Length: 362
Image (cartoon, rainbow, N blue to C red):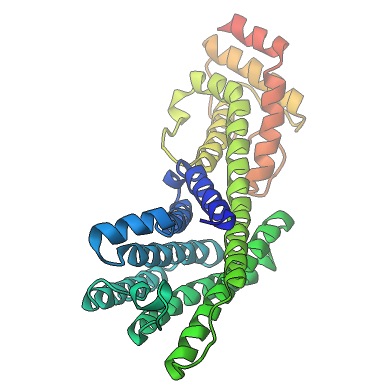
């Protein structure tokens, strides 16, 4: 294997391994993990020692078939991934993609079996004779589906990039470049095969340097481009975890007084964060039955009111009906703004003086 082949394999396996854990969290990440794993496996069965061992063991070109099938699976996973992140999900679209991929793979496998386990290597790819026309037709079927997947994914990436945030736009554009390089790589192979089918006497052959350059550009573009959305998703996950941790002291103090407001439903980090905001606000509403809510929206004053109200509730002060007005500004159903305000309240509530006062009351 050349240096380019080793570099390509390292990039692909690194990308696949880095997505093993995130793959458990969403369909999109599962598709992305499948795309990189399939492409990495296709590079493994391209390695000369692996090919030589499989050819000698099976007396067929099974390594080549596996390389093509894993490559097609990778492209299909990638297309479904792009479909789910750039357009409104439609089950019938994903189903149509998988049906097309299954039909293509079945056709290639059938052609492989009909030819007795031969594709094109024995005919000419590694021998001084011309590749048989059956092998070139086989490659046309393979390239047609592969190019369709890459072209469709590239178009969707480019279309979505126009309205994406700056950093995500960079990732989408890099992915688009990678898709374009992949199409260019296979377009040359397809053109050569068509030329030989039309005129078997032609001397036109694939350019090895061009093929390796476009393949590496495809792998780097897709790896780098899809890593940016993955990094953004990871950064968002860290932010949600930090927000939950910062809200915890205020939330725990309120839940200790009103445990019935805890919804206790599982969900994603974002769902848990929104649920925690709702639980805090619900508990604050209940506190208005003990003490009148402050008219100020200052986080420090609200935190002090929460502390005093919790003290009163724990002391057994009987309350009436909730006042129906929760302290704080009108957020207009903007959960993000409400979360930021509650973080300020939680920070004020968690100051040492407030903590000691609540601790003494308990």
